[in-house]
Amino acid sequence: HNQFCVAGIGYGESTCGTSSSSSSNKLLIKGGTVVNAHHQQIADVYVEDGIIVAVNPTIAVGDDVYVIDATGKFVMPGGIDPHTHLEMEFMNTVAVDDFFSGQAAALAGGTTMHIDFVIPTNGSLTAGFEAYEKKAKKSCMDYGFHMAITKWDETVSREMELMVKEKGINSFKFFMAYKGSLMISDELLLEGFKKCKSLGALAMVHAENGDAVYEGQKKMIELGITGPEGHALSRPAVLEGEATARAIRLADFVNTPLYVVHVMSIDAMEEVAKARKSGQRVIGEPVLSGLALDDSWLWHPDFDTAAKYVMSPPIRKQGHDKALQAALSTGVLQLVGTDHCVFNSTQKAFGIDDFRKIPNGVNGIEERMRVVWDIMVESGQISVTDYVRLTSTECARIFNIYPKKGAILPGSDADIIILNPNSSFDITAKSHHSRVDTNVYEGRKGKVSTFIVSLVQMVYCTARTSIKS
Ligand code: URP
Ligand code: ZN
Ligand code: ZN
Ligand code: ZN
Image 1 (tube, rainbow, N blue to C red):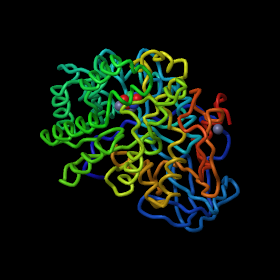
Image 2 (image 1 turned 60 degrees about the vertical axis):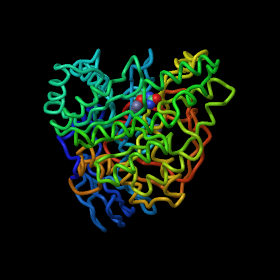
Image 3 (image 1 turned 120 degrees about the vertical axis):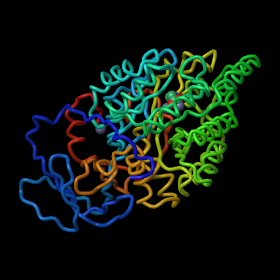
Image 4 (image 1 turned 60 degrees about the horizontal axis):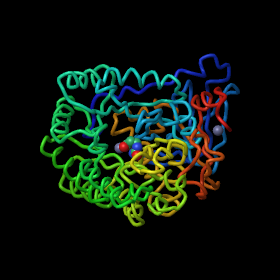
């Protein structure tokens, strides 16, 4: 438990797939290097009915136990992605990965749980929650929900309490950008922060100055800059830094912890660093695209190629990526998300004459585990135990599901991945599991990454037919 410990998260457990399975529900993973955030050792892991029963150097079992030999491989808690948008209705369209295809992609990439954002329906939290419960019925792995707050009145205030006390939601996101749709005012931000504080819930912000972004967008169009590069030019890092600083100061004023989602720039990261150094309880979440990409693609002459990199806050110039990696390795930033929110080329093409109409969002749910391994562990910036902390354990701790999730310990859920450090990956839209027709990591090759997702989760995965491999 840490200082952010609040009401237990109401995570959904998928119900499809296994109930009538006749195969053994006992599993032994033998001889691997078991890695937790606090410790690693060569050990066997024994699982019954989806729960870890024992972790010991040698475990003897009978013939009725299915045995996987993990010699030479790492046995780790499955990845937990703290930031996804499956089937999100956004910018006049709907993200193409739903709770089945997005989760299938996640599992194929070694992520066994994700936390998605419930968007209220016309401001109603209850209606929004019901809509997302329905979307999540397709699930083939465990998930949790954060909830966005998009307007403020007495009803919303009461509904926040209901969500925390009855639905297990313990985190609320406030959008400081997307003027005219999701954006909220500073007045609402203060009300929301106060309510989070009184409920013991965690406030989260999308930090960009939405009014200034709106100005910047108008200016680009007036200048005749209508292509995807206008997206980057209209919302520079200074606007992310400003909003991050403002949210941090308002959270300090209210005296409540703050979680900054998708920290994309040095400007925002330095605000998080400064606040943490002064003792303020601030968490910074970089996402894979910010750590691994730069904005040069937005200038690509082919619209389809450039448009797939449009997300907000924008992917920044070269240099921000490396600085965010360094911040992650030194503890200034605490965990890695993806902001997986995918739109096909036909949807991205809504903005062919005006970058403001390109649906914002990139892929990452399937790529996060392998690319973070490649850029952070293979590069020598973090240890294998750090990797587990940044991709799984820290998320479980922050959202109060540790050690049920995020650890390989007796009693923990058997959300286990087996990672082969002597393998390689080659990312392409042709072979990924997401429904989206492009991939922002197209052509990226690296070390590691046959992930074997053990357990029940894999039974779900193979029980469904629309998975490609
Ligand atoms: O471009 C993005 N990030 N789309 C998803 C919505 C959000 O702001 O997280
Ligand atoms: Zn956002
Ligand atoms: Zn997001
Ligand atoms: Zn597959």
